[in-house]
Length: 238
Ligand SMILES: NC(=O)c1ccc[n+]([C@@H]2O[C@H](COP(=O)([O-])OP(=O)(O)OC[C@H]3O[C@@H](n4cnc5c(N)ncnc54)[C@H](OP(=O)(O)O)[C@@H]3O)[C@@H](O)[C@H]2O)c1
Image (cartoon, rainbow, N blue to C red; front, side, top):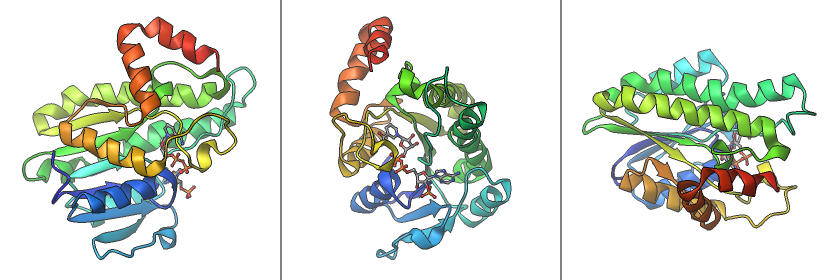
């Protein structure tokens, strides 16, 4: 799909990758961008095309209100995410629940609420789920988070054939480490949110079902395509 003229909605738009995605969408000519955040006052709406929206993706009431308010969306970017849990052997069930609540159930609930709007989109619509390289194999020290992102990838795959006849493409963005609050304590090379956001939108324009939006992601994506087992082993060493 063309970003130019699209009407996008980005969840978790107040900071990190979400904020960069809003900027990249404006730069690429989106007609309107709903910038959704738990606290909409944190959205810096310097551009008249930005519409701040209150949306906690774990709140059914707020999801319904957002879907009613933003009924003209053609591009839904499910970016909101958390990384609460640690290794599966040591993390608490509550921490894993927290990751699944936002990364899996929140994402799916937002998608379901926006389906009527996306189906109405003239010329079809696109959903992008911001997943992670850890959707494809676990990073053991973030095992709970990895499991939630793997589940979100599985849901992405389930939605593709269901929504294709309804003219809605469902894409997965699978970034490596990005320089945001989420991984501020992780000592690894990190891509800039602005670069990842631009590459992600380039993938949307091409209609890539799997978007690898940074250099590490591109390298790991190629490894995944060659050998999922080598990919798993590479991540096991982190
Ligand atoms: N950073 C990385 O290395 C990396 C790598 C691969 C994938 N990702 C994915 O990229 C996405 C963006 O992450 P980030 O790096 O930008 O992290 P971040 O800086 O921690 O930002 C997370 C965003 O998600 C929002 N959020 C969390 N829970 C929410 C909820 N229940 N409802 C609505 N919004 C919620 C946060 O809002 P508040 O400010 O209200 O908390 C914030 O805007 C996530 O899906 C993440 O899993 C990140």
